[in-house]
Amino acid sequence: MERFSRGDTIVLRGLHQDGRLGTVDSVRVVSDDSRGLLTWTARGSQQIRRVSLTGLPTRTLPLAEKIRMPTTHALATATDRDVLWLTPPESPYAVGWGFTADEQFEGWYINLQSRARRWWGGLDFRDHALDVLIASDRSWRWKDEDEFAERTGHPMFWDEADASAIRTEGERLISLAEAASFPFDGTWCRFGPDPSWAPTELPWWWDQLPPGENAPARPVDLPVL
Image (cartoon, rainbow, N blue to C red):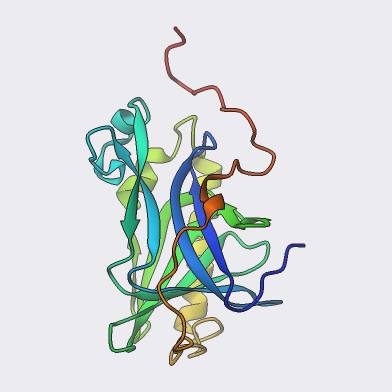
C-alpha cells in the first residue's frame, strides 16, 4: 500500500460517478498510520472546482442540468477555514476538524463517501452527497439531504438500498460523536500545523487519470447521438 510522509503535498480528489474529476484539493500530509491518512488543508491552498463554460460553479446547479452540460475546471483557493482531514483505511467516510483563523476548533465535518482509493499522488473517492455537521459541543445536523434525495434512484448514483446504507453509516458516526468516542473524543482538537508549512499548491499530477479508469464511461440516461 502506498504510504505518504509527513510534509508531503498530495491531492484528495472527488470523482464524478462517470470517472471525471469533480473536485481536487492540494493538502499537506500530517501522518499516515493505522488510524488513516491525516492531512492539513490551510486557507490559501490551491483547489480545482468544476464550472460551466461561462464560469458558473456546477455545485449550485440542478442535477438534471449539470449532467448534460459541457463543463471545465477552474482554479480556486481554500478560504473558509483550516481543516484537518482524517481518511480512515477502507472506510466510507472522512472526518474533518475545522479551525478558525486564530486556530480555535469549531467542530467536525463528516463527509460520507466511497472508500478512498490510494495511488501514488493521493486519494480518490466518490462523494455520497449526504454529510453531517457536528459542533464543538457535539450537537449535530444533517447536511445536503435534498441533494442526497435528488440523486437516490438516479441510474448514475445509488439506489434505495445503497442510500439506506449511506445514512446508516452517518447514524453510526453520530452515535460515536454523542458518546465522545474517537474520532470525536477531543483528539486533535488543539492541533497546530508546523509553522513552516505554507498553503499547498497543486502538484503537476493533479489531473492524472484515476488508476484503472483510462476511458470515459458512457453517459447514463442521456440520448445517444
